[in-house]
Image (cartoon, rainbow, N blue to C red; front, side, top):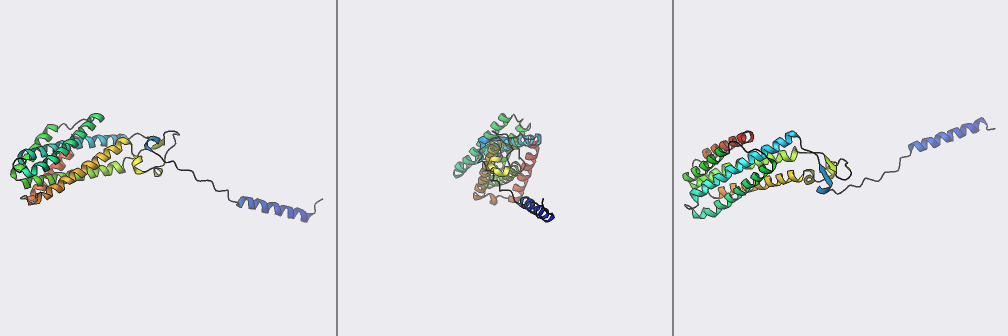
Length: 249
């Protein structure tokens, strides 16, 4: 038969053992191995109605804007190409780039079934008149027109890129397991679908082309146009109004 002291010692030992077990930290679990995702591994969630609507506006206004740029350069080329032979290759290069931009957005408009601006005939007439009118004033005035137009278009493209980059997050899922993918586990280029990333790349490239045209116009004496500030600010105002209208009508 155990004495009282033996019972107390046994009890203390049991308590000490239990306390030790409770204080022991569980063995560290091995970190979950991160998967190197590619586009083929990812399923992209659907865009919201607001996101879809904004994409349609982007394509409609950019198609209208590039249509206008196409006709502005066409008007300038018609007046200046023969009068200033040294400008002919410069004007032709810029005009051909605008034709490419316009054709690209025409194709996107057809693919996504986006309705064109109902004022398309007005954009053609107004743009051709702006190109020819400034070219008739002087080659410097035509170049000043280019500076104004490309300044507005370049800024407009930058704004679109900010929206498409920052406000177009969708749910990402593993195609095989169906598990949600944390965006921190994939690069920024993988966080957007091929369609969205392709549109961003095109807008980025076209913006760079427009800014190249701006630099070219400055190199060819745009700032010597008289009156330069009045001419450029007036054309900028017209362009901003046209963009606002084309987005909505």
